[in-house]
Length: 306
Image (tube, rainbow, N blue to C red):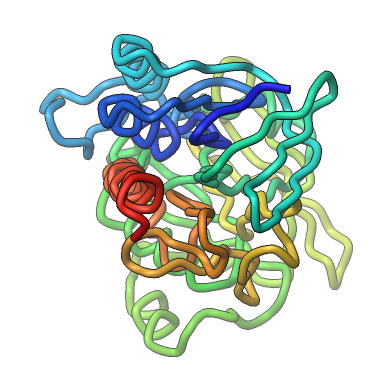
């Protein structure tokens, strides 16, 4: 069995930053990532709101830079899926398909997955007009026509943000009224660039190398139509990757892990950072701050008993 002082679960910006800091603190740290290092940001074609890159940087390149810097400071990393998690007063056991790993402290940086439409063309055109982050990609569609799918606060605020860049924004919702807060609804209805597409769902996203149009079905009439757009922003929710930790740490109604301002969870020795925690703004810069804070808290817990 491997034994480490700290195990970080998740190799996005929060997890990698935490690993950089715990390694600099001299803590024996292992980071476990099941997929691509860099997290969700690797899907962004261009990130122009991360400090230090005035001309922007691709999400893939930014993720690689995080990874390279973590390696430089000696962070040990393994590409493996964590399948089980056991907490006890003596520490924590993480299970993978091949082994068990013990840790005195754990940083959860598993993030959240964007809920997908699961329609033809969505996966193939992700990053080529299909996006899940208006803040990240909205500026790419200046003067173009785009669609937003959803009816909650995220969809409403995404539509409003996109209206600052796009020529027209079609807000597609399967019902005939939004679920967003009243103030957001008022702003949406007052914005002339935003056109509502009520009682409708996206059946297919079409295009060869980039999005060119959507096949939209009216759920009441059953009629289908084509909507010509250059991009589609999916805003139907997030699925926090919290399955391993239910019953171990406090989780809110939305599935996010509850932490204090030092990233401590309800269970001593377990910390959470990035998109998985409650009230995360889900931006790279915030995730980096969370990771650094979590690392400082881990150091205090292990070395100072705080």
